[in-house]
Amino acid sequence: MKILLTTTSFQDTPGTHHELLKQTGWEIITARGPLNEADTLARVGEVDGYICGDDAITRRVLEKARPKLKVLSKYGIGVDKIDVKSCTEFGIPLLFTPGVNHTTVAEHTFLLLLSLEKNLLFHTDSTRANGWKRKTGHELLEKTIGIIGLGRIGKEVAIRAKAFGMHVIGFDVYWDEKFAAQYGVQRAANLDEIYAASDYISLHTNLTPETRDMISAKSFPKMKKGVLILNCARGEIVHTSDMVEALKSGQVGGYGTDVLDSEPPAPDHPMLKLPNVVCTPHVGSRTYESVVRQATCAVKNLILAMNGEKPIAQINPEVPVKKAV
Image 1 (cartoon, rainbow, N blue to C red):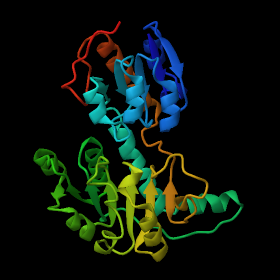
Image 2: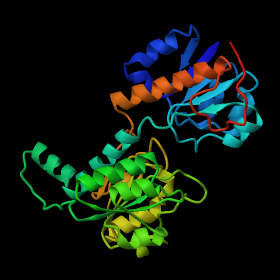
Image 3: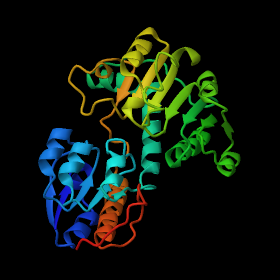
Image 4: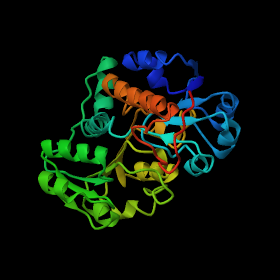
């Protein structure tokens, strides 16, 4: 059995997940993802299983991969780079790892927010250059944070926001009333209510046709002038050129993001040069603790499905798992 493994955090982080995969006795073929469509196409066709990160797994890729490919195991929770419909049509179980990185991503959200409000990069750059330049920052206390998407990660952000003494307002189609009551989260009736009330807006929704370019020139006028926007979800939720203009004009005071519309970005990507942007290279879930949890879950999913057993979590449960080993 040949298994393709492309997620770099899995490969680069020591932990028990390596031994768990080794114990299968399968041949492991590695590549450094995320792979574009051409690179993914070049590596499928002879593999039986696939542990992927954010590779472009299109219909063309899946057409070449089948019928050899028995199981596709996603390391992580976002499947927007995968043609889920084609996976289901071709009878390929698509597995994922929910509930493994919400704490880590929520912590990273506050890293971005505090970096912006305390002018962290300006101050560290100044002192590293033997300077002592100072800017006055802002407290988080009593500020309002609007959370778009109150799933596992959004809830963890809300809990931490309350610990900072912030007012929390949330929007989600699937509202958890018990959680909201426990942590004092106000429910927004719609996105416009989030935009109007929030000093900070934190994005924790999936990328869908409805959420693509959700944050754009159409939404900025509805927000407070100088709002800070945080994105630990997907880069495509934000319209890049619109955001750049809003940052330059001061309509948006700062953008803290762990994701971009193209990853890795081109050297001239406009988000990389603006002084009021804090951008990290999609590492919000990359901690030793989280990587081991995600990788272990991805491997267990793969092993279970390859043996014809029910996996931990499957995106397309209507596709039956069949024993392949």
